[in-house]
Image 1 (cartoon, rainbow, N blue to C red):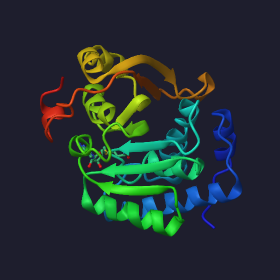
Image 2 (image 1 turned 120 degrees about the horizontal axis):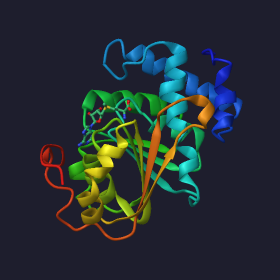
Image 3 (image 1 turned 90 degrees about the vertical axis):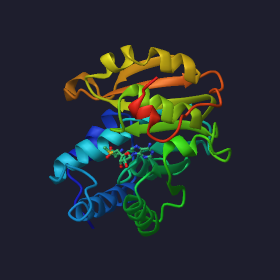
Image 4 (image 1 turned 180 degrees about the vertical axis):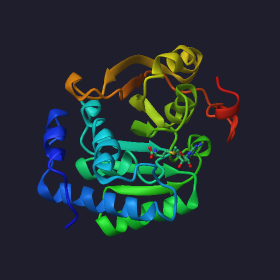
Length: 240
Ligand SMILES: C[S@@+](CC[C@H](N)C(=O)[O-])C[C@H]1O[C@@H](n2cnc3c(N)ncnc32)[C@H](O)[C@@H]1O
């Protein structure tokens, strides 16, 4: 069984996340695969095992408290999931939720499908597509309760990828660093245009952790106009 550092359960419990031994084991097996595969495909820059538990697994699970209240069987989409972050740790920690991993790059999606199969993640699927196209696909547009993301781009771009995929009444949860304030100052137009309502920003960790990870939580309260998201590449190169 892959090693699980002693700090993991304690740090998770400080975030309000409790996992059983088999969930911890599944997380360890996922991390093993991710670190092993990253020697061939660049899936993460974090290679050292303790740092990988903290920055990849525990950081991802810091989103869990932001899910509440959430309906049983709620649908989550992880936009630009790369090697499965934060979506795979979330799917392991919350088997009651249905998780879609969205990623544009084929070789990363192949890795995600191998993980889903090997780890027996029956609540998880991976889709190879660009967010700009999935957001215009009626099978996915405004179908998700929650859109999550990590390290996909500035807030304005993340909002144009995320809000079209979320139901009215659903939520966007974006993992962000210390530049969030500047990014939000630039994102006012995007919030209004894309149908955002109330927004809250909270620290992912209690103060004793000294981590600067913050989570922006945005409720969607109106339908997104049909012209958004715009064509692939436009949200990035001509931000709203
Ligand atoms: C910096 S990586 C972050 C990956 C992962 N979220 C993480 O934190 O490790 C950004 C990922 O988003 C994907 N991506 C970027 N733009 C995208 C888009 N428009 N639609 C789908 N995936 C996209 C990229 O292919 C890449 O794998």
